[in-house]
Structure formats: structure tokens, C-alpha cells
Length: 393
Image 1 (cartoon, one colour):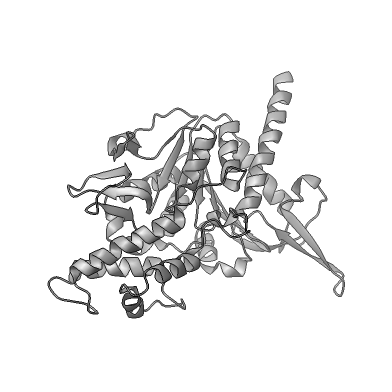
Image 2: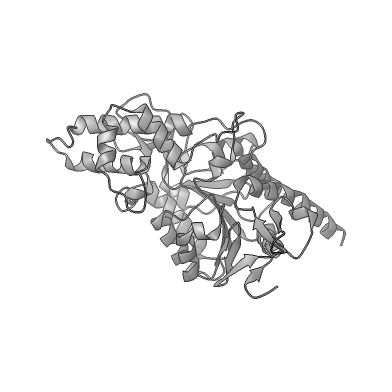
């Protein structure tokens, strides 16, 4: 194996060892790619990606002014504005329109359009998690199957309720910053307390959720809203310099910064494409400040599809990229080259013969959240075996 080649088996073992220590702080950052791993009976994604979500919302609200807003937006490096761009732009227009009209829409009409966009997003992403075993169930099972000193933390910019459903299906208690049942209220003081039973999960939704609301008095609550006067708290990353300064977003981002800032911290990103500049800044700055922290970024596609992730990894040595065709670790980019035939890794490592070149293409599929879920399930068994062996020593 040359200096420019790496073994995916070895890298997977490093990841497994990092997750197996019960003393490490462990967190997951679940991005927009994770819901794509859950499929319907028709083999379609349960929740569409941002392109599919944009198409659904725009078709639903056709003729209600959304086309005029979309045509106003110029987004560099993208073919078309996404629904997040559109929602962000509508909110900015609401702030500046005053008594005038913009594209024949007054403030009341813009506010109505904002509510309809949020409602349409909620209908599109508010899907029930299937009862059968999914990657989310596998993650929840892994969390509940391995005793730890510190609670697992989950960060996500996603608005859906899939991770909540999976945790509840496995009877795993979690704290998301809200207290109560019927109209759970946001409690900053509880968030800042470190004392929480290790079997609990800390869940931090970085961009809001379809069941977060802001009432007319400015109170933030989680639950169901029965009045149109309450505003749904779905905030894309594009408003980070404005809306993310407000609670509870600032508190959620502080949790991410706090997790990475001290101790032996292990973070796994899955389904995250590093498109959020604000989250990238938190990741890289905190990793740089704490050499005992490490982040494994599991990337679904080939490394060349993630130039921003590569740029981030070049700034900090403790950010390791694991893509389909390559890894970037310790400041070096290396191509996968398998050296073992271990059957335990056949679900994550794929080899394809190239007859003309008398060579092989090696792929690591751990960036697929579905494959990563299987990896976690398999680890539960291996951890149980190791614990039994240690108890006899």
C-alpha cells in the first residue's frame, strides 16, 4: 500500500474503536441526506431532498405569489433557488416592505405566503417513521444498547420528527430543551445544566422543527398550534446572521460549540454536505481549539463532490473525511485500497474488478446512512461479546 492509498477496513476499525469507548463523549450530526435512507413501499424516499421539497412546495402554492418571489432571487452556483432561499427571502421582505408592495404583494400577503410555505413544508416532511427497522431505529437501538458515562448528543438541522420517533419507539428518553407535555416550553436554564442521566439523549435541533412555535407574546413552545397568530419556527441557515441570534437557536448552536470544546469528544456527521457555513465555522473553530476532539465526516458520494468539506478538513487535522472513493485524514488525501477479506465489512466495502487494467475499484459505503445504521447494529453485538470476554478475564 503506497502513501496515497488507505485501507477502508482500517479506517472503519478506527471509527469503531472511537465509538466503543464508554468514556468518550459521543455526538452525531444528522444532515438532510439521512431521511433519504428511509424508503416507502414504492421505494421512494420518505422525505424528499431539498430539490424535491422545493418542487413539492412550489407546485402546492402555484398561483399564490411564490413564483414572483422565486424569480427575484439570484443564487450563485445553484441552478434554481431552493425553498429555503424562498422562505428566507419572504421573511426579509416582510421586514422591509412597510406600507408598500413588493412584486404586487403587501405585508399581509407576504405573511400569509410565509405561513403557507411553512404549512406546505410541514406536510412534506411531517411523515411518520415506518414501524419496520430503519436506519433511525438502528441508531436508537445502538444508543440504548451500549451503557455510557456521558449522554449521547444528537445535532440536526432537519425539521422532521424522525429521530424523535425512533428514540420513542425504543423507549429512550431524550431532552430537547423543552419542558412539559401539552404546550412544552423552552427552558434555557435546563439546557445549561450538565447533569442528566447517561441513558438520556440530548437532542439539539439547530434550525428549528415543524412542532416549534412562537406565540404573540414571544414565547417559544413545542406542540400543536390552534391559531394562525402563532408563527412556526422553521428557520433555514440563510438567516443565520439574523434569526440564529434568537432563542432557542443560539442555545442549540452553543451546545454544538460546547460539546466540541473540551474532553475526548467524538462526533460523527452523516448526511451532512457541509453546505452550512455557520455550522462549518463552529465545527472547525472548536476542533482546532480542542486537539482531543475528533470528527468523522461520513460522505455519501465521491470526495470531489464535497469541495467545502475538503476545504474544512485542510484547516483542521482532527476532521477526517470518509467518502465513497477516498479518505482525507491527517492532512493527506488517500484512495481506498483494500487489503483484507474480512466478511464483517462486506456491507460497507465494495470491490469491483477492472479487467482491462487488471485492477480493482474499492468503495466505502459508510456514508450511506442506511449502511451506517447496519454498522451500528453490528457493533452492538461485538460490544456485548467484548464485555463478556472482559468479565471473564
